[in-house]
Image (cartoon, rainbow, N blue to C red; front, side, top):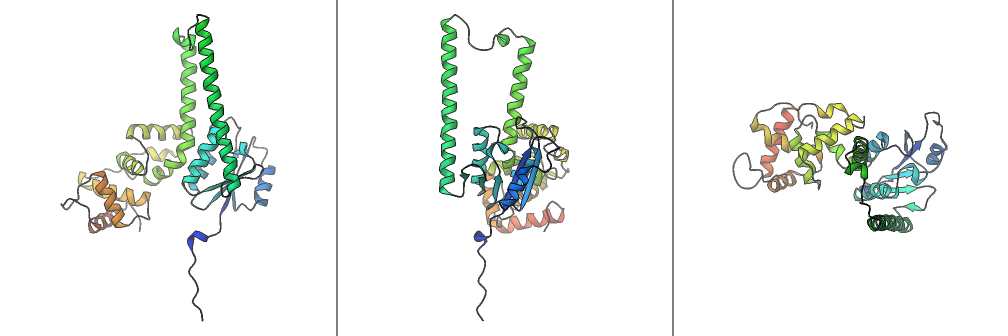
Length: 305
C-alpha cells in the first residue's frame, strides 16, 4: 500500500473572511451579507457605523486576527476604507503579513496580477491627489503674500481660544485615525503580553519586530484605544511584581509568547542582539540557558506549555 503523502501547509485552502459595514442598527440583513456569503466567505464580521466614523472596533479586531493565506473580502472599497490613502495603508499591511484582499464589485484582488495592477493605479491616483493638494496650498500661500496677508490661521496667530481648541481637536482626531490604522500591527502583541509582562519588555519585543516605540508612547496609545473602547481596560493593569533577577525570565517569556515559532537558538540570538548578558556568565547566549529560563517561566505561570 502506498504511503500517504504529507500535506504541504502552504497549499491549504484559502480562508475567505468577509467584512461588512452597515450604517444603522436596522440594517441587520444588509445585502452585503448575502453577497459575501455567495462569494464563499467562511466567516463574516459586521460593523455598524457611518463611513465618516474613525472608530471601527470590529475592523480593528478582524485585521489583527487575519493570518497568512487568508483573504479579506468586502463588497465595495468604501465599506472598508475612509479614503484612498487609508485603503492603501491597510492593504500594504495585509500584504506584508501574507494576507490578500478582494473587493467583489471593484477590480481589486491582490492575489492576481490584474488586481495588483488596479491597486497600483489607485496608488498613483493617491500620489497625484497629494501632489495637487500641495501645489494648491503653495499657490494659495503665494497669492496671500502678494495681497499682503500672512499665511496660516489668523485665529492661531491671535491666540483665539476657539481656534486653538479646533486645531487641538483636529490633531487628536488625526492621532486616533493613525492609531486605528496601525493597531493591527502591534495591538495583538500587547494583548498577548499585558499585563503579565512589563511595558519595558513589551516595547523591546515590538521594536525587535521593526517598530519604534517608547514605553511612554505605547502606554499613551493603549490608553487612548481603551478610552475609545477599542481595547480592553485590563491591558493597563499593573504587572506582577517580581524580584530584579527575574528580568531575564520575563523577557524570554515575552519573546516566546510574541512568536511561538522561534527556536531556542533564535531566542538566544535575539537576546545577544538586545545586548543582554547571559545569567550564567559568558559572552553569548546558549540554547540551554534559554531553555532553563523558559522552564522557570512555565513554573511561575508566565507561559503555558
